[in-house]
Length: 105
Picture 1 (cartoon, helix red, strand yellow):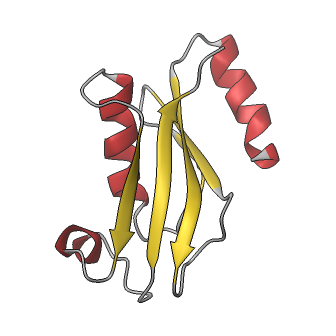
Picture 2 (cartoon, rainbow, N blue to C red):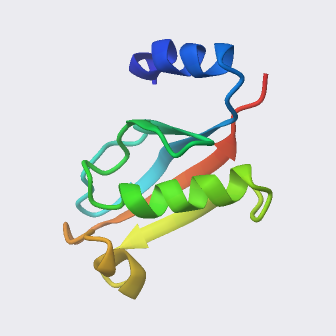
């Protein structure tokens, strides 16, 4: 998360709304460890990674929906057996759980 702070601070100074996605649990083989994070601003700009590229596109969509007020902060799960997760490329065989929330300050 520390590697995201400079960009988050820049976005914040620009008045951008930001959502944070963080890996809160993994089961089986996962591309990133618990604690890995990415941030998405209201313009769809992304920093960091929660899956090494496997599900980032879906996470951006979830983050933007939360920033737009369409969804509440929540845990989303991606795994090989999920049709949606497979469609976005999570083929490592494991399951990752991400908590996505707006950054409040």
